Amino acid sequence: MTISSGRCELSWTHNGSVGSATAGCVLFPLSEIVRCREIITTVMNPNVALIYRLLTGLPIKYNRAPPQIRSALLRQSSGFGIPKNFIKIDETRLALTDCFAQLGMKLRARKSPDLIITHDIDTRKGLERAEAMKSVEDDLGVESSWFIPSEEFPLNGIVIRDLAEGSQIGSHDTKHDGTLVHMRDKTRLARRLAKSRTQLEEKTGRPIKLFRAPLMQFSREIVNALEIAGYEEDFSLPSWESSNPVVMGGFGIQTSVPFHIGKMVEHPLSLPQDHQLLMIFGLSTQAAVKYWTQQASRIFSLGGDVVLLVHPDYAFSQELGDYKQLISSLKEMKSSIPSSLRYIRH
Image (tube, rainbow, N blue to C red; front, side):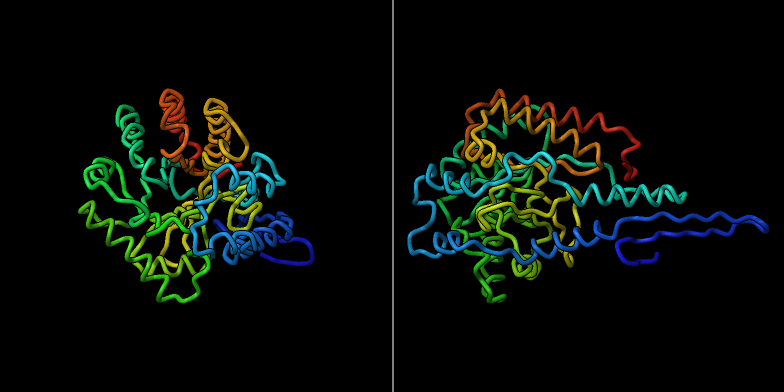
């Protein structure tokens, strides 16, 4: 590989039997590599918005403000609209893979694309509604992950254990107060994250290895503390959110493929969460199902994982018919992925 101004030159020579050789050279724009590096740097060091600092730094919790006001603030901060093309790194990865293919090297993907269904339970109401959604998933034979804050509201141990049956429980921090991204003391941060893990382990009787931060908070410090606190997989980083509350604007890693930061496995939230679609952009549950299935088809076609986030706190726990349609469609889509997608290709 040779890098020069404005371009990256990939070249390959293979010597086979005596007297035979194959060689090739493909040019790839260096700007694409630079852009990917800039995206990664931005998400690891988010520029926390002043209004977020104010709302999460008050003695009164931010969620005491009416949800209509909070949604209006996020709606105002969104200059991008509903995301339609939010996996730029995946596109670069596939273009680079095509370059290798032109040189005669077909790269294998890590595995076949996956469907991961997740839920954040933010309130007592959400916990009360969760079992209805779990019943839909059980009927369809799918597994999901439920992220629960350990101290935000009283936890019904029976309900928690029912949710864990055939699915997984993950930590959603101790409190849904949005303060993790402010914590710079690594020891204090790790202690808080570990506390949530052990509290949930006591409720479920099972190891807790999954984590998602409230409000999709993400930073290098949080990831480092998660590893110290005993977690193995993090679901806090969106592929793209047009109205991420932490930065009050667009934010995301722009890939749908899991990756490692140290020992931590990062699973990008590859579909925009229901809160964004329902509360920020005003979609109905039926319109959200249509949007999600369209985007999931594209993500699967590019070899990425479809990671879905639906809160039982919101409308889908009441519109169970639409939720069943959504999960059925995604499950069928996953089962029909051609074997050729086990290779990363354009």
